[in-house]
Amino acid sequence: TLMTWPRTLMRTVKTQLILRLRFWPSAKRWFKKATMKQTQVKKKKQLDMFSEDMFSENYSSPNSVQKISSRAQENPNLTDNWDDAEGYYRVRIGEVLDTRYTVYGYTGQGVFSNVVRARDMARGNQDVAVKIIRNNEVMHRTGLKELEMLRRLNDADPDDKFHCLRLFRHFFHKQHLCLVFEPLSMNLREVLKKYGKDVGLHIKAVRSYSQQLFFALKLLKRCNILHADIKPDNILVNETKLVLKLCDFGSASHVAENDITPYLVSRFYRAPEIVLGLGYDFGIDMWSVGCTLYELYTGKIMFPGKSNNQMLKFCMDLKGKFPNRLIRKGTFKDQHFDANCNFLYHEVDKVTEREKVVVMTNINQTRDLSSELIGRQRLPEDQVKKVGQLKDLLEKTLMLDPAKRISINHALAHPFIHDKI
Image (cartoon, rainbow, N blue to C red; front, side, top):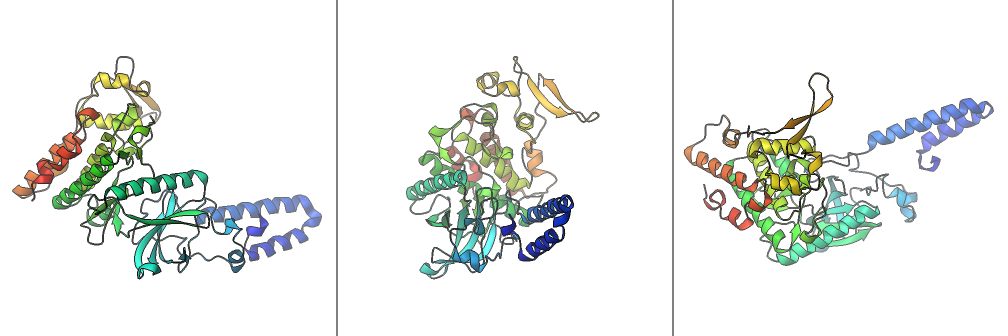
C-alpha cells in the first residue's frame, strides 16, 4: 500500500498523479509501472530463507542493522512494522529483548526462524544465542514442538554429557516465540568449508565427532525422540572446535508419531526406508550420521541425489540392490520399482535432454568405499588402520535394511571409536 512506501517515493507518486490526473489512462499505466519497480526493489532486499549458515560467525545479513521508525515504536499494534513480509522479526543491533538480552550480532536466517547473538544482562552479560521463530501459525507450532523436545532432552541429561544443545529458557517478543540457547561458534558445514574444503577433516577429529554424535543418538533413543534432520548444518561446535552439539529439533518427533512421508529428512541424508515408504524408527538418524561422517572425512556429499529416485540409485551403487521383501512392503514402491522389483531409473537422456525411464534388472556395486576414503593420500600406518575402521563402521551404519543397521551401543563400542589414535 502507499502508506508503506518511503516518503520520497510517496512525494514522487503524488506529484506524478496530480500532473497526470487529466490523462487517466496514461497515469494508470505509469502507476502500475512504479508499483512493479518498488516490488522488484523489495524482492532484491529479501534474504534467502533457506540460508544454511545460520550460526556462522562471519554471516552478514541485509537485516543486520535495521531501524524501525519512531512512529512504529509508539504503536505496538502495527505488527507489520516489526515483521517482514515472510513473518521474520526485523532485528536491530542494540535492541533489548525481554528486558535482558542486548542484541549485538545477527547470525543468520533459517526456514523457521532468524538467530541473533545477544548478551544476557541478568547473567553478567553472558553470551547467548536467541532463536526468534517466524510469526505465523505453522512456524509457531513447530517452535513449540522444538521447545518441548529440547526440554525433554535437557531434563534427561542434567549433567550435559550427551551433546544435545542446551536450552536456557524461552519468552515471547512481539508475538514471536523466542528460544534462548547456549552460544556456539559455528556448524560443521562451516568447519568443513574453513578447514577441510573438498578434502575433509583429520581422522582424529572425525573419530571425536563420531563418538559425540553417537552419544547424542543415545540420548535421543532414551527419550524416544527422532531428530529426523541430522546433517553437518545442524551440528554446532564450540570455540575450540572440540565439543559438538546436535541442534535444530524443528523436525523432531516422538518415535511413535512416524508418519509415512517421502520427504522427511534433508534429501542427501535421507534413509532409503523413508524414500520407499517403509515404517521407520531410530535407524533413520543412524543413516544420517553415517552420511555425515563420510562427508566430514572426505569433504564430499556421500549421496548427492537430485531426486528420491536418484538417491535410491546412488545407495544401490554402493550397497547393491534392495532385497525384494523390503521393496514389496514400500508404500511408494511403484514410483521406483516395477511388479518384478526391477528398478525404474529416471534419468535425463544426454542427447534429447528429456527424462527417460530405464528398467534395471541388476544393479552392480560400482563404488569402492576404501578407495573413496583414502583416495591418493599417503597416510602413515596408524591412520590407514583408522580409515579402515571408519570404512567398516560406515558399512554398518549404511545397511539398506534398517533392521541390520548397527545399534548405537555397538557403534560406541566399534574399534573406530573405542581405539584411540
